[in-house]
Length: 329
Image 1 (spheres, rainbow, N blue to C red):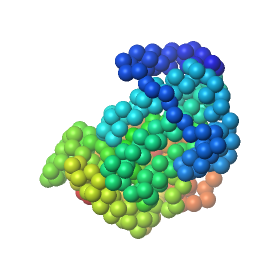
Image 2: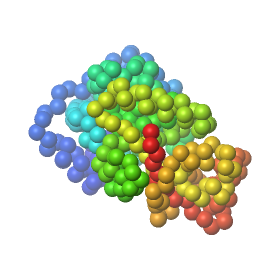
Image 3: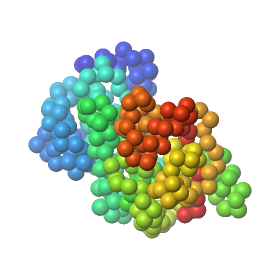
Image 4: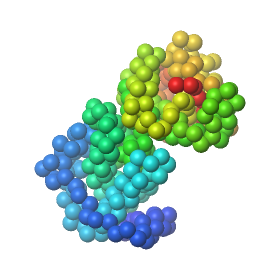
């Protein structure tokens, strides 16, 4: 009851609930693993050990709350609709603190309920079991990010987790690849270079996950080789000729702070930069490098070359900007 009361008290989430409840298709019952089986399911998804007991205990509370279970069924049904379709995935909203522990972990149960559907989609595409397992294990990574930043279990950005539970993103070695389409500006830049693809054509959006070791050129090369083979075999109807990236790691200012043979600059060298954001976003590099975008710049350590680059630039009055680039696969 606490969960639904908190959601209805928020105007944005109350509207979201009304939209969800107005859908014509009546959902079936949401199926969750039994409490005795749930720990193994969560561990297979790399959920941090510290969060297992809470998720098992809250499962019983969830099962006793008819309204919350009905919401779970609607969310899971909406989520698995159009499984694998690019851009048709559902973006679950973050819940407020007033929703309590169940609200903080509710989306984890949605993804667990959707797990059989995404695994079936992977099997239907012939995705190898190890690729499926490592892809879906990002749920645990994102929970680790939440715990590092907030000190509790949860998901900071449930919309991100939705991408790989909807069959749109895959982990292949060091990098992740999201099935996407070229935007207007990048697509025009690709077409102007003499490339065949243009705006709206398929592309792979490259993401750099945390907790995966250094971003070495050899690790990137191995990952790209895996990606070329993987998508050609499992998504042959989608010609992926172009890779794109949208990240602070493509900010050209990094070249003024890091040596030319550093991993980040070598990563930048792969891309043709199309444009930069014009609005500063200093919290993104601070969050990725130090774990929390809200940390005071004056207190940040300078232990590594990347830490020194981020900190020294900010302390000198500079700002960091997202960059957008592409290269031919």
